Image (tube, rainbow, N blue to C red; front, side, top):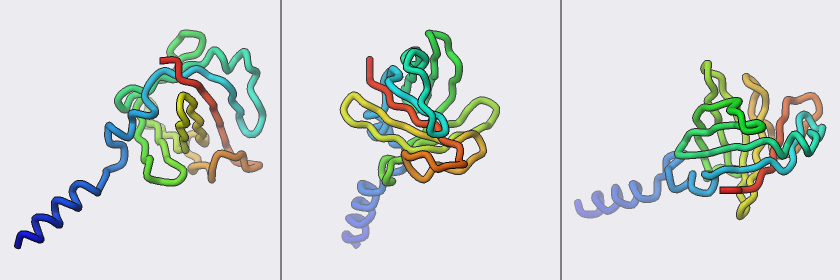
Length: 138
């Protein structure tokens, strides 16, 4: 009987639900735009530098030139390769994508609302694709 308790204890400690608070730790913070592309075309650097993304405890805020443009929630699954991120936007809309944190750099991509998750961090001709590279400022 003791082995059942041990098994339950082991399963309970090794099963990690998507988006545990400790997994969000790497993505949380305030990030400034470094580069971006939409459907394979780079955005002007002057525009990208005005972008800020704030990830805080499952909530995100997108600011452009200091003005809030979008707010909502996000969930991540760092156990998937590449790690996935899903945004819940106002009005019930969703975005599906991937993210990668390396030190103080974050790269994330997603498809347009209602489109399937991209196949990775590379644009596929004819598919909706947004890619952002940002650096942590807080």
